Image 1 (cartoon, rainbow, N blue to C red):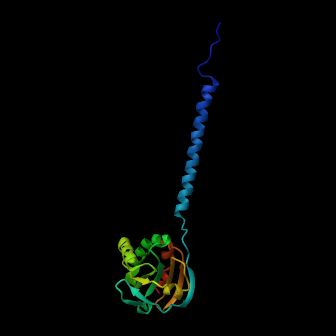
Image 2: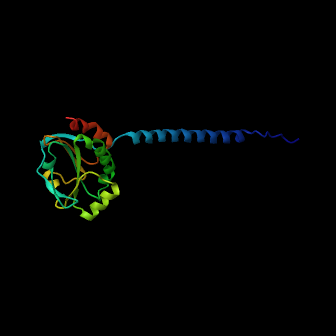
Image 3: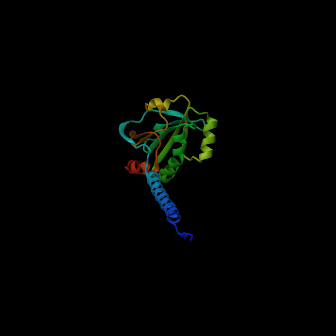
Amino acid sequence: MKKKTSRHSPGRIFAPLLIGIGLIAIGFMLVLLLNDQAAASTQDFSTVPVKVDFPAPELTLTNLDGEAASLADYRGKTVLVNLWATWCPPCREEMPTLLAFYEEYKSKDFVLIAVNQGDTAQDVELFVAQYGLTFPVWLDQGSAAGRAFSTMNLPSSYVIDRGGQVRLMWIGGISKKNLEKHVPTIIME
């Protein structure tokens, strides 16, 4: 007599069970990975400003219309001076944030001045049009602003209060979160 074999041998049951457990483990790992990535994307890795207190430098440059423009012309307003260049990735990344912040606060005697470091007027004009910038943009072929603020790092930003004192300094990109956390209190003074 032939021995009768069962259609449900242990190997036939064990293999699908192992595959199922493996798929569940892979799914669990994907959920954990996606949760970690979501948490990381909500963190703000931008630069935090440093509180400083020194007089704003005397700085006169040329605007895009070829006219002289001076920081002294903005005394009585809160001014954020942003040193940048068209070739600088963090500068490009922060421009939409700076523009949105400027649009929100310009009616409160706040002005943002973007001081381009070394690009041609034509390159700057293309950049301004591409990003739809509405705040003043100055040209600085010789890095006078970098020397005046004692930096050659881009981007660099400085918040000047209504009395002409530099109160905050950023070296590196600015996030919306850090702008909203640190600048409005100076604007409202």
